[in-house]
Amino acid sequence: MDEKRFGKYLIYAIGEILLVVIGIIIAVSLGEWRQQVNDRNEVLTYYNNLAIDLKQDKAQLNELIAVYEKSSLGLVAEIDKLQLENYNLDSLYKGFSNWNVYSSTQKFKPQAAIYTEIISNGKLKLISDKDLKLQLLKLYTNIYPETEFYQKNTSQTIKNTSTTELSSIFRWLLAFNNDGMETTTMKLKNPLVHIDEEWLKNKQSKGFRIFENQLALRYASYSGTIIRYKDAINEIESLEFEISKALKKNK
Image 1 (cartoon, rainbow, N blue to C red):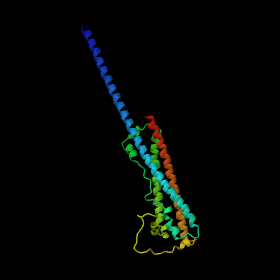
Image 2 (cartoon, one colour; image 1 turned 45 degrees about the horizontal axis):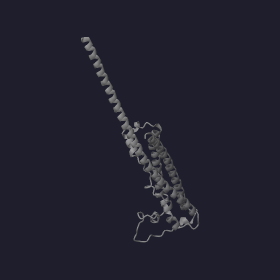
Image 3 (tube, rainbow, N blue to C red; image 1 turned 180 degrees about the vertical axis):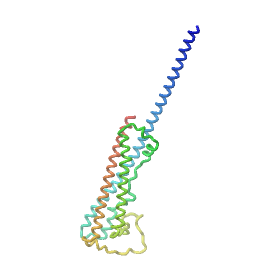
Image 4 (tube, helix red, strand yellow; image 1 turned 30 degrees about the vertical axis):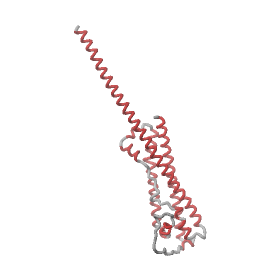
């Protein structure tokens, strides 16, 4: 009787142990499943927020491209008019707003808060899509920094030449008073002193070459900036495509 009772107790004990082990396995599996669901939802939230940032970045770049393209056309028109004999002070200063870009304010500033959060919180490992991850890193660690570096250098170059060579022949006061912006117009009590710009009358003068060169250099700078901005837009659209695929896949 004791042996039979012991056998039953042994079977019961083994059953209890199996139930406990199965319970632990189920609990661990449920915990892992919940974590996977939470990770998936977190990644999808990041994707949606990144899509919003990218949309804003693209809109900002398109606006800047429009500004620089308009100014580039103005530069070509100004250089063309500069070749005419009747090009005078009115032509010089009244056409200023058509070709000048206030480069200190017209700059691309990408929305990087979501990307920074992903990196700083160690969430990059949650992005399993290899193509999406590579495009994300390419845009934020390569394309955006290069674009900002290029525009910073271009802006600084234009600023330096404007305050050195161009300022030697150009009267910024008249330019700003004719740019159509109240914030840059200086209201003086006394009439401005007339300065006869002799270099405008002599197409062979050093001043003429300085001004023409400045316009040509700005055109080259603006064209390079436009190319950089368009390249950035192409990379943004590539990342948008990968995000769109990932969101559709996880619906």
